[in-house]
Length: 304
Image 1 (cartoon, one colour):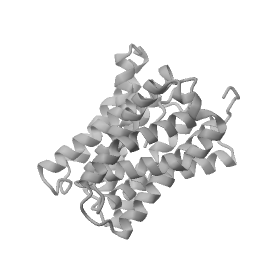
Image 2 (cartoon, rainbow, N blue to C red; image 1 turned 30 degrees about the vertical axis):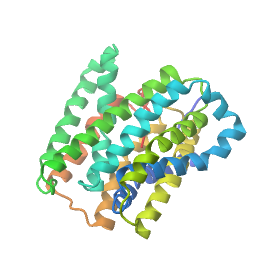
Image 3 (cartoon, one colour; image 1 turned 45 degrees about the vertical axis):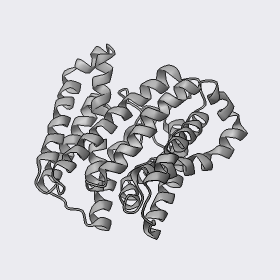
C-alpha cells in the first residue's frame, strides 16, 4: 500500500458506508443471538462460520500457509481480537442494551492512546490529545451514570466492565499486528485465528447450549458470522487499499450511531438523557484523543 491516497473516491465512500453499517449492526445481531444461544455458542458459531467463508480464499491465495508459519502470534492475535472480546460482548449483551454496547466499544481509541503512552509515545501528551482522552472518559461516566441503564443491578455493572475490557483488548490487537504480523497476509491471519477460536469454544458451546435456538436467533447468528465477521473483514481491508490505513478506520465513529438507532427502532431500547448527553462527548473525546483533531493524524486500526 505505497500508493498515495488523496481522499475518498466513489468506491471509497461506498466501502466506508458498508463498514459503518455492517459493524454497526453487529451489536443488534449479538443481542438477538444471545436470546436463545449461550455466549460460548455465539462465539463458536460466529467464528467457525466466518472461517468457513474465508477458507477457500485463504487457501487459494496461499495466505493460510504463510500465516501458519507464525502461528504463535496468530493465536495471540486471535485471543486478543476474537476469543476474549467476542465472549465478553456476547455475555454483556445479555444484561445491557445493544446501543450502549456499541457506544462503549467506541472507546477503543482512548485505550489505544494510553497504550501508546505506556510504550513511550510522548505525542500522546499533546494538549489536544490529552484533553480528548479526559473528555472521552467523562463522556463514559455521563453515559453509565444515567438512569435506566442498570436493569439487572450489579450484573449490569459487571457487563459494563466486560465491555470496557473488550475495548482494552481491541486497543492491544493492532500492536500485535503492527509489530509481530506485519508481513503476514491478513486473510491467512484472520482465517487461521477464526478457526482456532471457534474450535477452542466448541466444547463449551455444546456444554452450555441447553435451549432450542429460535429461528430469529439462528438467523442473527448466521448473519453475525457471515456478514459481520467474514465479509466485514474483507470489506475493511478493501477500504484500506482504497483510501489508506489512516482514513479507513474513521468509519468507527459512525458505528455507535447505527447501533443506537437500530437498538431503539428494532428492539425498543431506551434512549436516556445520560446516553443523549454522553454520546457526543464520548465520540468527540475519541476523535481528539486519536487524531489530535486533524484528519491526517495517525489513526489506530480498530476492530469488531
